[in-house]
Every structure is written in C-alpha cells, then in structure tokens.
Length: 365
Ligand SMILES: NC(=O)c1ccc[n+]([C@@H]2O[C@H](COP(=O)([O-])OP(=O)(O)OC[C@H]3O[C@@H](n4cnc5c(N)ncnc54)[C@H](OP(=O)(O)O)[C@@H]3O)[C@@H](O)[C@H]2O)c1
Image 1 (cartoon, protein in one colour):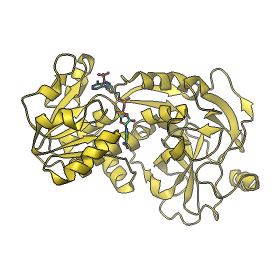
Image 2 (cartoon, protein in one colour):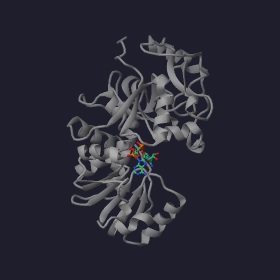
Image 3 (cartoon, protein in one colour):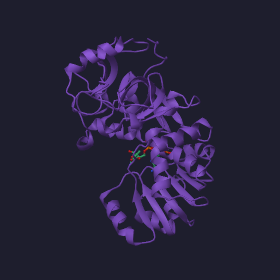
Image 4 (tube, protein in one colour):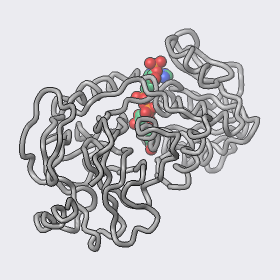
C-alpha cells in the first residue's frame, strides 16, 4: 500500500538529483512531537529554509523522500530511528560548506542515521525491507527526518547487540578515528599515540580504536574529561588546563589531533624521528606541510572520512563484542535540534549527540 503511494508521487520530482527529494514543507509543527503519525505521503523532518543560526532548524511536515525501484536501482529507503549529530552539520547549516552541499532549500541535514529498511531499489541484493541498518548519507544529508534515502553501498546491517542510538553515533566519528589512526597514522602494535581532543565524538572512538590496534595511548582533554578518557582505556591522560602536551618530554610515533587545535609545527618536537601528525581539519598551511613532509621522515597528514561498508562492519563487530562503545552525552528529539546544534557549536561535547527520530518500531504493514 505504502509503495503504491510512493510511486504515485514519483512524478512530482526531478529524477537526476541524488539523495532525498523533498518539496516545499506542508505544515509547520510546533511543540512536542512525540508519537506523531505521518500519513503515507508525508513525514516529519527538521528542515532549514535558509542558512543561518540554529534557530533556522524547523520541524515541519514534508513530502516523504521517494525511491523508484527502477530509476534508483541502488538506493534504499530507511525508516529513521536515530540520527547522529556532527560538528559539520552546524557548518552546513551556517552555509560554510555550500560548495560541497548538493540540493535546494528546504534542506534536511544529518549525515548518518540508523533505522529499518522500508524499500529497496531493483539492483539491491544484500538488503531487504525489515533489515536493521546504519547508513552514511554524505553531504546530501537527510538524517534529521522520519525517512531517509541512502545508496546501498553506504548501508551496513546492524548486529542484534547494537541499538539504533549507538549505531547512529558511529559512522562519521568512529570511521574518522579508524581511518586516521590506521590509514594515515599507520598505527602498529606497541606504537605510542597521543590523541588530542580525546573526549569528543572522534576522540572517544579514537582512544578505544587505538587500544584495539595495540597502541599505547596518551589522551589530551580538559579536567572534566580525565575520568572518561581513563574509562575508555587511555594509558595516560594529559589535562590541557594543567600542561601543554606540545612541550612534553615524551616522544610519540603518532599524534592524532582529533579536534585540530594544534599544528604539525607545534607537534614535531614530540614526534619520533619517523613519527606522524594527523589532523581532521586541514588548513592551507597544513596542506603545504603535507606536501613538504612527503620528502621527510616525519609526516604531516590530514584525513577526509570516506564511508566503507568494510570499515563499518568491523566497527559494528567491535561494538557487538563489547570492545567499542559510542559515548552518547545526550539524546534529543527532532524539535530540540536547535539546542543540540548550539551545544555542538559550544565545542565541549563529551562523546556524541544523537537525535531520536522514531521512538517505537513502525507497525508492520
Ligand atoms: N575530516 C573529516 O573527515 C572529519 C570527520 C569528522 C570530524 N571532523 C572534524 O573533526 C573535529 C572534531 O570532531 P568531533 O566530532 O570530535 O567534535 P566534538 O565532539 O564537537 O569535539 C568536542 C570535544 O573537543 C574537545 N576540545 C575542545 N577544545 C579543546 C582543546 N583546546 N584541546 C583539546 N580538546 C578540546 C572538548 O573537550 P573539553 O570539553 O575537555 O575541552 C570536547 O570533548 C571537528 O572540527 C569536525 O568537523 C572532520
């Protein structure tokens, strides 16, 4: 029944723009939105109609995103239960990344979500309606809504042990930590690794992943993060209110600055002769250093996260086995996203913020 409705609405949108297609909002929704039931053709979503501050985020009733099984053969439609919030969402909301953000207003932000597959394109062979999944939605976004569209290769099935909130917190932050440590930092068992910004979304995963890869971990955070860093497995913790880690007498095989608050120049004195510095936010100066250090033993690197199902499956396996957990500082409802963005922008989140979109499992049709 639902699918028929989707196909009927297919004619109302262009078919060449990737990602979720939404039309003008239908109904503004104020107040608490618990247990709101969308009808078959509309959904609740947090949209922005223009770039700006966190108050631009409005929960409205909008047309459901659509997939046509034939025209979008590799896409899947997901009933979203939870969506991760990332610092880049706030930059997208402000318009700071317009050049890499596809689609027109109104836009639905949210780079990642977890939920249940509702519909699959014709060529999707390894996912089916009813599967519990986590998805990376890329810069197109779409996670802050009851339904989201993802490419099949950007979706991974969830082990039973991993709930939607944990899963939604993982793709970008855990994936970034893994790729920075393994692919850019070439972390080997026994390496000494220093993680700056160790209590943030990326950092909390980085501590745990560095330990899983066999590293000896020094975490850098503020006083109120010290206990958390230790709980996550850090061997040593430097409180940045007490000591400047760049002046340490210790040497590290790898410095991973998860929050990009230092530079290669500032860190080279604490790197071993062939040590690497990896940052998550490259500046023009850092890009230059990256080029220059191609010819030196010490390396400056930066990481641009790229979702792979292989990495996601490994991360989920660790989570299912109790080796990796998302630290979720707080969950929000869709209509609280302005608060969540303001908290993220303040820059002191411990772990991740997650928006819970759908409380209960949808009724089976
Ligand atoms: N390149 C990529 O593909 C990629 C992917 C993901 C993220 N990123 C970027 O990576 C950065 C970190 O992301 P995230 O999700 O981890 O951010 P986040 O969760 O917002 O980071 C917040 C953490 O940063 C810590 N922090 C703030 N100032 C600090 C300082 N001076 N020294 C050390 N720690 C400090 C805070 O700890 P205290 O409260 O203790 O200060 C807090 O725990 C963001 O800029 C994000 O956009 C890039």
